[in-house]
Amino acid sequence: MSQVVLITGASSGIGKSIAEYLVTKGFTVYGTSRNPKSDNLNGVHLIPLDVTKSETIKTAVENILEKEGKLDVLINNAGKGITGPLEEIPEEELKSVFETNYFGPIAVMKAVLPTMRKHRKGLIINVTSIAGYMGLPYRSAYSATKGALSLTTEALRMELKEFNVKVTNVAPGDFATNIASGRYHAPLLEDSDYAKNYGKSLSLMDEHVDEGEDPMLMAKAVFDIINTKEPQVDYKVGAFMQRFSTFLKGVLPGKTYERLLLKHYQL
Image 1 (spheres, one colour):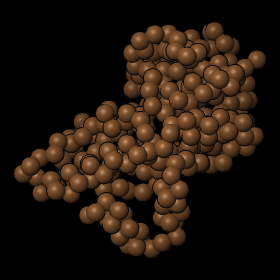
Image 2: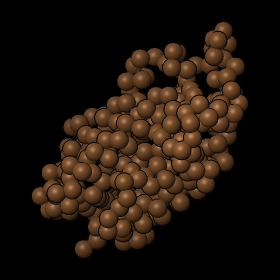
Image 3: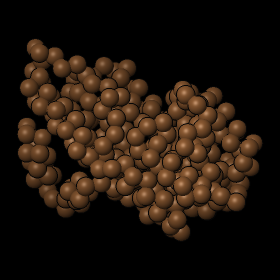
């Protein structure tokens, strides 16, 4: 029997690439989006699920278990971006990004864990971000959500060890996707004291995404993780310098690392 995979946020970008690649490798894949336009795309079973709405999570997981009798792998991929000077980001937008990027993945994990514990088998892959390993200017909220999910994963691994349920992070760098189009941007206000540097940072962010890696790199990395008997705590996928930056964060003095970031973002 093929392994059954549930991947959230599978209608575009990295999620879509992972889902379609796993289908070619013989997996039974259920991909979610808030409003799927069809129920099957390139072999991926598309089902409605909004990670901020618990009833849709419950329904989706119950339907998969009814059809397949099991759920082997959860890939928590759904998320959204947010940019802006922290002072100027509306409180409701800060709460919204945490609902999607942090509390949403937790809700999906809670929904699948009972069946994984029952079968003493399962794998959860949380898609975080290299941005979650460091506080980035004008991306403070995004870095915070991904960092929080990464640390939660580290703790959850130990809690689930006795049930043989594996949990890991995979942190992508910049990939050539449409993530920028769905990102919340705090308005670039001409009379704001942040206008010059925020505008410069926005242009750099979009440039990095446009020049990002092929999402297929993430798909192949996830496939390799699924086929690893004992997954690592975390994996970093992307351009060498982005991955290397997380190493530098751990070995350089804080102010030295901060100067590198300031230079990178031309601040």
